[in-house]
Image (cartoon, rainbow, N blue to C red; front, top):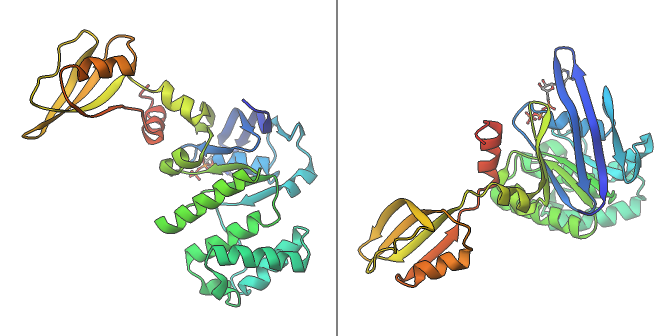
Length: 305
Ligand SMILES: Nc1ncnc2c1ncn2[C@@H]1O[C@H](COP(=O)(O)OP(=O)(O)OP(=O)(O)O)[C@@H](O)[C@H]1O
């Protein structure tokens, strides 16, 4: 694993009647997209607020780019909070320039970068409108742009896809991946598991205030494999009998086609299994069932592992 840009070490946060985080440790690799997952109330926003120094932990430490987090580190973070907070009565372009200047950009540079982003996000016609005249999705776009405009090395997005239609969610995904290619480290919290598979390199799953799963998405999905396969064959020849696998389920698709769910019983490779079946039947489709992040989330959170 490459070096961490951000680490939480044994972070604990207690509120009056509730422990929101219990010895939570995460390692966010530099230049990667890190998904912070968990059911409602798990503690994700609390951890994000601690990383942003909005609230302090009761115990534990946050390490930022190799040093113990310092107050000035917040200038190296672009944070899109869950509750979006722009001025409703102020004009969009003017507001965006003002906020960019607060983050250290000159007026000229801010305008140049904003024009570029606004064109890409198709919101340039709204430059002179008041924020309250924009739809929720457009307001989201404006706030996203303001978050990333000063190009901080660490970007943290809390539920960035909420309020976006599928086309705009796609646009946002592409922009997040572009920001990664430019070298930013990105943390985002989401309940949208499809987006996790598409854009996250690593994840941490928090449940009941603790990290219950952490690692590279591909490794985690492989760990949860259960030797199950989907197979579709022409029905002229029966499936060969074998000690290597068993049929869990079968379904007639049409007069010529049958599909099976198989479980592998030995350590033969996928290619060997394919040859074994293919020697007697004509294979139309063969694939190993790799659990989705959605399945893994539900199984882990419901304790079915
Ligand atoms: N300021 C606060 N005072 C008291 N309790 C709080 C405070 N902030 C958060 N909590 C509690 O801490 C727990 C974790 O909340 P948090 O907002 O971190 O969850 P989350 O994982 O972000 O949830 P969601 O997915 O619903 O946004 C919740 O039980 C919440 O009620």
